[in-house]
Structure formats: structure tokens, C-alpha cells
Length: 459
Image (cartoon, rainbow, N blue to C red; front, side, top):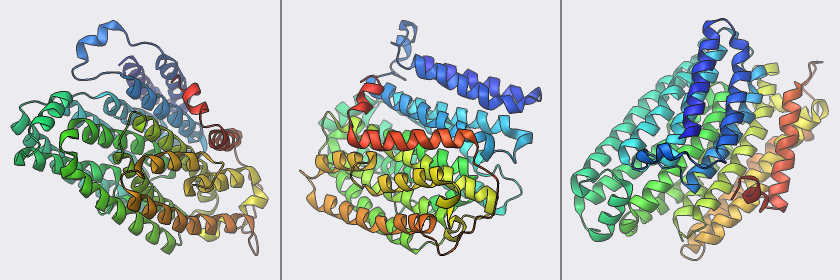
């Protein structure tokens, strides 16, 4: 909870920096606060907070996912100076809202109670409704905000109805008491109905098909840095909450919901990858790519073991790094060309080779090509699931094979164009080159030496 308090106070200070017309310093204040929070995340929790353990417990897994989310947020904030250059009048609000959303994510990492789960989901979601529409002059951004708000409210209704049914049958909001009830009353109809409703709500939040309808439009319409935040930090937070609720709270009725998850995985992998092939806009393609990765992540529910949470963390970290690598490239192209079609990327490798290489390695990692972190992430989850559901793993492998086509399409446009579309002398900011080097090194290092992940995050 110390980390949560530090990030919350950082958000408040960053917000008030704008009040005193020092909005340009909000990014530095935010990065400094995040670095302090990252350091504190390695320290034991203060005994004072033990009294709140029934609601929020900073466990080993909570600490691991908190560290990952902070690192990814820091990298995104490094990109903010250039990305938010046309938001000079309200930069401080954007950074503060992203930090408030991160606070919601941290609540989701440590929740022990369904009330805390609900609070975490709402603290995570409400700032995002504003952030999605922060580009006020863009009709797509306005549409993204409204659509995200309406679909988020719809999902929240499912979540609350599910929580009400679970509480009505089990008599408790506590996750571990619900776990015990599920073991002893696996045939309770009201309890099972509540579990399914909560599954549907959380499937909305992580954008698992067919509950993904909102995500391509929202991801495409939102400012690109906000889209990267949604694809990475928000996905990490929401999916861990999904994993924790289903694997702990409803463990005793796994047989009642696991087949539903299996069907959703098949729909997600087929629909997202086929739709990804059909896109001519790179940002929308990445939106469908993000949906497809939820399908791969869904395999974590099969063959659960003691390493499942660690495997999930590794995959999410690798995927988030790759997302930043591609979105960083997209942000640069979008600023220059005012568009994100494939044609806008023609010849990028000749103008900004480091940026193009970072994006290419990131997409190869997303596709699961060997010697990248994405390959090791997929391998660990597939190896866990293959013992119980070899058919689903086969579907996931086929989905990965299809995804290579649309990733390679963008790589070919960047590196092997018939003619370059870049006629500018403007250069990429130094912070982008620094992040690009970090992304390249991290994705390759974790692909070759995956144990680095455990050592660097204090496992």
C-alpha cells in the first residue's frame, strides 16, 4: 500500500503543477514519483498496513505485477514529451489521470475482497474514459470516449450483478471465503450464475472476443500514447484481476466455467487474427493484435500450477515492451504524416533505422519468433496448457502463424519500400532513441536469458 500512496500523491502533485502553470514539469514529477515507487516496491510492506489485509494485501504476486506496471508506465512517460506536444495546455491533467488509472491497477493487483475489486476496476476505468477523449478536436477521439464509457458501464453492470449473486449465495465478499464456499457448494446455481456474470464482465474489461467490440474503435480513436497505455498497463491490471478472481475465488467450480473460457479463446484467436489480416491501418491492426494476445493469455487458466502467475507476468511484460516498441514508432509517423495507414510507414528504416528496428523486433516478439521475449512467454504458457488442452494450444499456434502475416506486412513496408514517403529533416527525440535501445535489448535479452526477468524483479 506504500507504493499506492506514493503514486497517488505523485498524481496529485502532477495535477497541481498544471494549476500553477508548470504543466511542462508534470512529466518529470511523474517519472520521479514512479522511480521512488519502484524502489519502495522492493521493500517489505510496513506493519501499519497489516490491518487492511482483508481488503488489500501486498503479496509476492502483487509486488511482481506492480513492478511491471511501474516500469511500463515510466517508459510511456519518457515518450510523453513528444507525443503530448499538442496538448500543452493540459499536459498535467493527462499525466495525473494516467497515474490515477495506475492506482486502480495496483488496487487490482492486491485486492482480497470483491468490493476492492470493484473499486479497483472503477479507479482504473474512469480516468481512461476521459483520456480516450482528450484529443477534443478529433471526432474519432470523442467517439472513442463515449463508446468506452458506454461499454464500460455495461460491463460494470454485469460485474455488480455477478458480485451480488456471489455474495447472496456465499454470504461473503472475501475472496478466500468464496474460494472455500466454491469447494463445498460447487452445484449452487446462484453462485455459478454469479461466477459466469463476473467472467463476462472481466472478459469485457480485457477485450476478449466476442466482448471486444469496443476495443478496435477505442484504441484507434484515442491519442496514441493513451492507446499504448491501454494496451499495456491496463491489460496487465485487468487480466491479472481476471486471473485472480477465476483461479482463486471460483477454483472450486472450475468445471462450470473453464469450457466457456475455452470457447472464448477459440473465438478470440480466430476473429482477431483474421480481422488483423484485413486491416489497412497500422493502428487498427495493432488493436486487433492486442485482442488476439488476450486469447493466448487465456490459456493460462488451463493446467494451473505454482508457476502460472509468474508465466502470466513474464508474458504480459514481454507483450507490453513490444507494444511500446511498435507504438513509439507509430507515434512518430503519426506526428509527421497525420495518419497511421501502412503507406505512411514506407521507407521508415532509411530515415530512422533505430526506431524501425525496435518496431520490427517488437512485432517479431509479438508473433512469438524464437530468441525474443514473446517466444519465451508463449512457450511457457503453451507448455503449461498442452497437458490438459492440446487442441487449444494447436489453435493458438495456428493463430500465431496467421499473425506473422500482418506483422511482416508492416515490417516489409518499413524496410523494403518501392519508394520512401519520408521527405523530412525532423529527427526523432533523444528519449525515443533511448527507449528504442532499451526495448531492443530487453526483448532479445529476455528471449535468450529468460531467467533475467526473475532476477531483475527480485524474485
